[in-house]
Length: 489
Ligand code: ZN
Image (cartoon, rainbow, N blue to C red; front, top):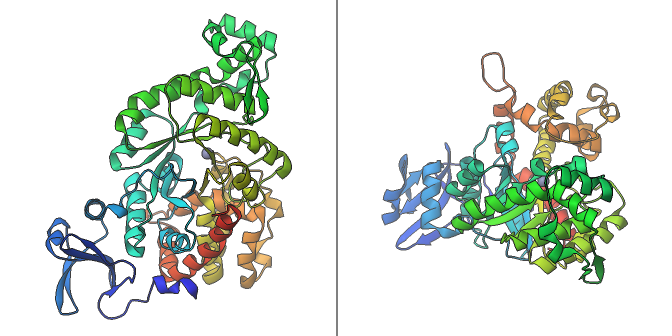
């Protein structure tokens, strides 16, 4: 197997991961595999900075062994700066590789080494994902740091506090060292006003004391030309835009000036993707123009595109219409100096070439669920009995999971697993409805408990994934590799 060389089976004594050895001043560090798990091995002055739990003789030298704790990850980030995240969104092609399980980093990095024209966000998690998986920002960041160290990945990578909704969560992520903040503005967008006529919007704005006077000098009577696309606003349209986006603009401006700008160490993304109505080019232009006018400097903006970007399956909609709209969105982004960000980018194969074309290879695409689904496919392949138990449990708890995710899954289209043989189980991951069942139930499955409080599946799952690390890396190589190729990376 191609990627098997990034791992090896545990034998007698520690074995060095071949790409991990690194120098820090007069010290040498490496990641080693021991019988009780991976350790940071160090020789030299730096050893005293780690909290160690043993030593080993390697090549006639005494080596300090330190466990993969949060404290030791922080030391590693200090002494080997490439193991710390940095601001990578200034690069042309960037991809978010959310790793809900903390296991995908090695496979992702092995793949990235073959695709030079892309920079990854290896740590990317929302509060929703953290709470559904019972993980923390620290743990997500540390998993990425250890993978980067283990695989000697020196290109640079970022860490995204994804879909954050308030200053406290953002400050927390920044304090821990996250280098990108995605501000979820969804709760501040008043979609109930989106369909008002010009007259009704003007009337409603007047009733609420929302004046468009301050906008008139910028927009009234002006036709904006954005790479040949003409955009203009009526008075009523301006009133409607303020009704729908006024709060959102104030919220994003306040967060930017009070939390993001003073911190100086993070790329800022404005996300308006999790609303029901697609963002029209005129809305996008207005939002961008108003943000810039208020001194906000986003690195990326995530509009809500036409069609449906559901989790873990291909684009639903007309790819040609998507490309026409993407052309204008990308032109607006170029005009205002940021990148387009495409959320829920897992498996959107039919639109990736259009994203690459229309943004001229300057984009951010986020994936997460598909990395987890590949891990679950391994379970279906290697441990069919465990998979059957998970699948049945997910079916029973599907409704709970739909509280968190918008999907149009039809459970009746999923074959009854009692009627299919073990060898057919991995094939379920080729069916959209089965994919979504397993995808959105990730939290339910990972945190299900027995009456005595112990995990129903989690420990067994991690045992399987540890045993089949090389297979998981190979699966990511193929599946995420297809993403990167279609995106021109
Ligand atoms: Zn999103």
